[in-house]
Amino acid sequence: MTIAVEVSGLHKRYGSTVAVDGLSFDVRSGEVFCLVGPNGAGKTTTLECIEGHRVPDSGTIRVLGLDPRTCGDELRRRIGIQLQEGGLPARLRVWEALDLFAALFDRRDVPWSLLERLGLTEKRDTYFVKLSGGQKQRLFVALALVNDPEVVFLDELTTGLDPHARRSIWDMIRAIRDAGTTVVLSTHFMDEAETLADRVAIVRDGRLVAIDTPEELIRSVGGEDHVSLTASGPIDPAPIAALPGVTSANLRDGRLLVSGAGDGWIGRLVAAVEAQGAHLRDLSTKGPTLETVYLTLTGEPVDSGAGSTSDAGTDA
Image 1 (cartoon, helix red, strand yellow):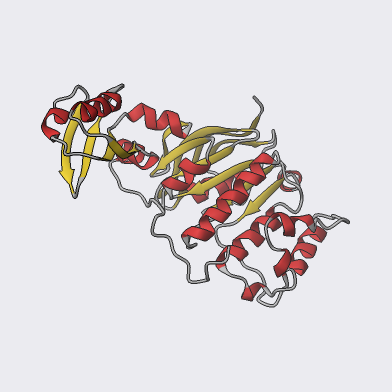
Image 2 (spheres, helix red, strand yellow; image 1 turned 135 degrees about the vertical axis):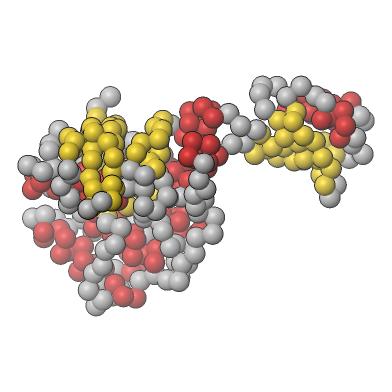
């Protein structure tokens, strides 16, 4: 598989503060690759070094085979960058921003189709200052895609957005990947990484903690599954709790809540409920998540994104 980004032994410090401490990883062409970790983990500094905006203290970086320190102009024509903190003149219209960025890349044909692709057609004549938070983020992504990049870098793209806007942005990221563009995304929302990423690199204190697909990372730490069910008749939780693989079974508000680990225990649970003469009405399961992985590997909680809100409005 072709490698789009190679990072080896990356170090960067600011005075006595070590921001990145020996990071090494690669990004495969055509994937969504997520750098995850809490604020201050070194994600943004890592991206800025890869993009050529910062010079690392040591280590090697190759993006599309190019060194960002020596081939910056050539590289920037082939990549797209959405910065964590960006802005445009308040009274610049959406179409004017796209036209301006196309001119910066010497594009004679302005890619107006990006407005439709990113749901901004109706906002074409709207001033930047009048856009909602989600619309501004979409515009920044459109500007990052104006040069038809091979790799696009998105830094904390959904921070501050409400749940509706975040999910709309997620759909947009999937569409970018499906169109053939490699996506490198940094986030401190574990649900975001679990939903979007083909592979995840967990970063803490500037160091790589783990890297793999979300599924393999979750599988690697094990953990319990949780089942919630209701049935047509009464259930005695005591024999359920004694089943192989079951770690706890309790009745709460008419629901049987059961936790367990390993293979086959949910099937045994269903059989045991029916053996008591009860018939299932509904059953839901919840397994370990990427947040579980992070807690297990680092011992620290991290934002799941569930409470993300936006003062800029809900229109994504």
